[in-house]
Length: 224
Image (cartoon, rainbow, N blue to C red; front, top):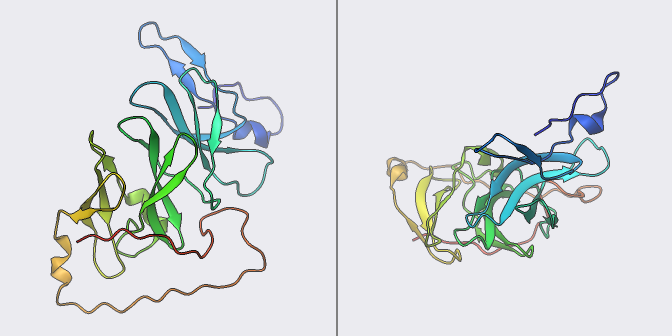
């Protein structure tokens, strides 16, 4: 939220993107500023145990593109730290806390598809599924995807592929087991879908950070 008064005169780019997190008291309406972040902030979420606040944001030198990453801080606004993705990937979706407040779930575009990944409070990332990209197998339609987690840690996802429409599936907490719960794509059983072939193109220099990441192989969760 941006609550500071807008300065007079020419627009200051630094001010235009400078958001912060505030606490609003239901009892008396008091507003408390928790951060002085100096950058963009979105998708702030309080942990189930009430001890932590996580959000997606970026700060630093003004550039045409800055990678949004996961940040976490204590409920009071102290101990702010960044949970950078090891491959420098962008996180711009809504975050979902694990039921025990030990970490977060995030949908991350990676290598042309969508992946569900988990990050703990120490910044260790784990890939749980590489099959959340949708029926077009594209990681760039993740805003239309939804994830839900039960109190026991099981995760409901929309599992997609390049040859079938999405199905509701349930992942085990560690991502090793996956069970499809619907058969919405049965109508495609008699349809032959043209195969999709991956193609990698060399660039002049690696992207500093962004949507693509490195062409590395990651473990894939298989649904039965």
